[in-house]
Length: 77
Image 1 (cartoon, helix red, strand yellow):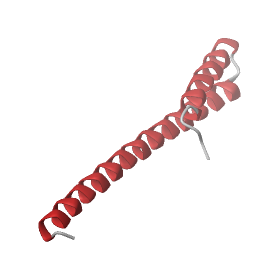
Image 2 (cartoon, helix red, strand yellow):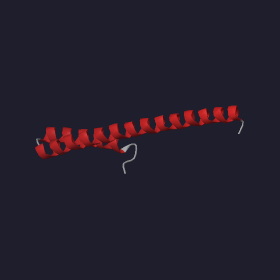
Image 3 (tube, one colour):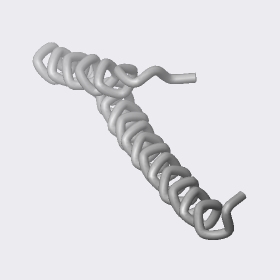
Image 4 (tube, one colour):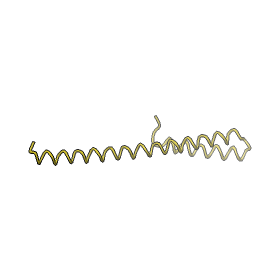
């Protein structure tokens, strides 16, 4: 399971490999770097989406709990 920095790491390593491959004429290394950069960007976007979903879940739970508390007070449970 990727951690929150794995995407950024893969993007940085991918860019590095790609540039070294381009400078040395090593096409395989340049392609590998491109792939790793794209993989990192995907991981980073996925982590961002997971964080947003978790924020929304917490917000919904808090709103639901507040609504239930209000109802309980009105019904006097």
